[in-house]
Length: 190
Image (cartoon, rainbow, N blue to C red; front, side, top):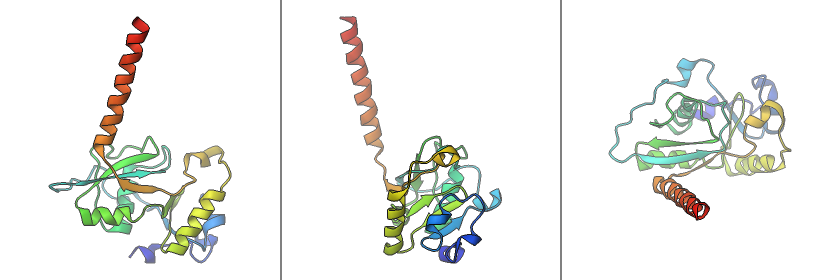
């Protein structure tokens, strides 16, 4: 169970060395360290999920350039007991602070959606609120954080959000941008 894997709940002395948020969160919110070997993280290629209608989920506030999609797969497998896949990302680094993952069915998607604003990604693992009190403490901690500098700025200072993803929304935004670009070209040509 994921609660048995949580570290750092008795104090910061059990946290890995380069943990950024340990001073403020150790003993307050559960901590789940990233696996030490890539074999523990999981497959390096996207896991093929056989589903007739996979549910797309958007995860935001991820570490910038510092996280591989397989780490998100590991989180989904460890905490939510579900496999996720992404045809776009596979083993590459998440180049933005968000990614879209596909979950096999509605029930499993809800497990992932339940992580909304309960997870803060750190350099050495993830902080996970296991109760409403911990969620409130995690949110208060994030709101009080000063601006980051150095390597820490690659890591989010806000909880990860997990929402349903609507692919038609992205297509509509792209169409609006392309239409606006064409109108600007017509004005410039006139």
